Length: 119
Image (cartoon, rainbow, N blue to C red):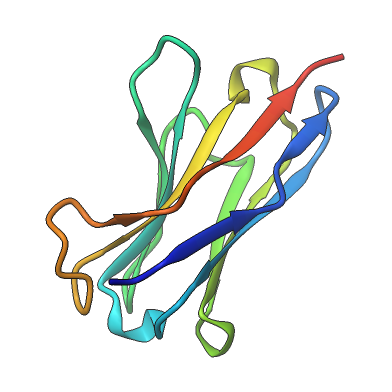
């Protein structure tokens, strides 16, 4: 079972930036897809960004041009650089690992990290 630990959340003013990290307990080179989802209060969990192993990244329309997902295979870590943050970006952000060595249907999920955008 791949364990995922997120970090980097916090409180930031509108227009500010944060970088989230997700450290995996296994080599992410052996995981088909890693990514970030988020869930705001009273809303469904939604896709933010995905980084397939050896494939192009994918973003939700609401974050394109503001967020960047990246991966460091040597550190078994993925990142989410979030710029020009808006109040509507406020949510719990979850890291997910899907496929490859992750046998769990629906993938392995981290515990989440809170991002709050407020003045």
